[in-house]
Length: 341
Ligand code: KG4
Ligand code: ZN
Image 1 (tube, helix red, strand yellow):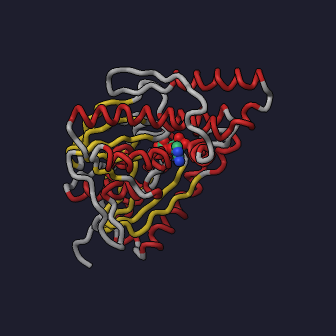
Image 2: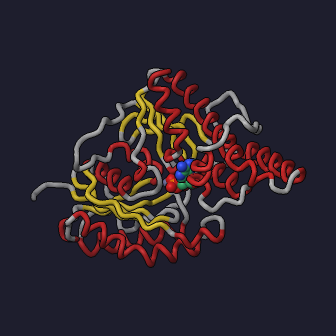
Image 3: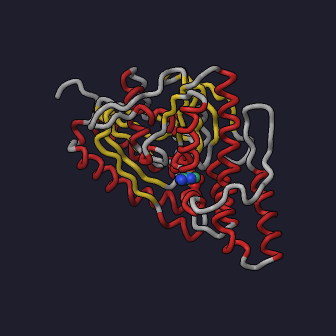
């Protein structure tokens, strides 16, 4: 078919190798190979991540093309995650994308990973349209590396209203989980265990500032001391209180996020509110956001689980919007570990 935009997206910024085909803004495949090799180390080991990306990238791209029923020759452009992320991981995706675009003689498109998380809200499904956020909207972007409140004025207009001064929200989840001897990544496990706990059982200190910025490092220390004190008194403290500890930690992190988000909504008068990034898979964050549709009159936009954590569909949809305005990269394009929005 003539004139359709067939975009291959490639994501390799951290520990997920992913490829996706988006045709005219509609997702046709989104294949993710997660790396279990890091579990035994309690965190991502950069060197192992880049090796696993090298092993996974060809089969993942191949599967994404097959699942979409697309041949390489039908591609219009290749979009890849330029950053931010781990340099060794980014290099695998960028080298692959550059070689493939050069071999096929089609445009190469650079994608900012954080822009991808936000624009994931615009991915359409084959089955039909879902409501899209209306500009301007606020997006709470919460992942393992970032925590930001962003005012989004169009596909390419971003203003960071607030961000973390130290740990990201996902990092806070992962560090708390590590203290509790839970497997990596800790966020999803903690979320699960919190379901059966009392969120008010424990109180932990968390930094309170008047601006829209976040700080989670004090909370992590407060949590660590509380657990150490408990264990000193009673060796089985963690095991016996695991659900309450998880629920209380989750409650502390999520209520801090909402305090700032509500402040940003009040300050800007914007009621279109979206969430993005790995932590937007959190069940309490999702339910609390939905609740505010009735209590505060917000229009809430919550991504499908598939698009919360790292995935290439968000890279492909961002690539699609850049393709429409012919925002192409040179073959000298290089990954940048510390790319900002
Ligand atoms: O966006 P993402 O996949 O990777 C980064 O770009 O960082 O986010 C990963 C983060 C991890 O910290 C993970 O623990 C957290 O998202 N996460 C969650 C949940 N699912 C993933 N945190 C809380 N609750 C969850 N259900
Ligand atoms: Zn991410």
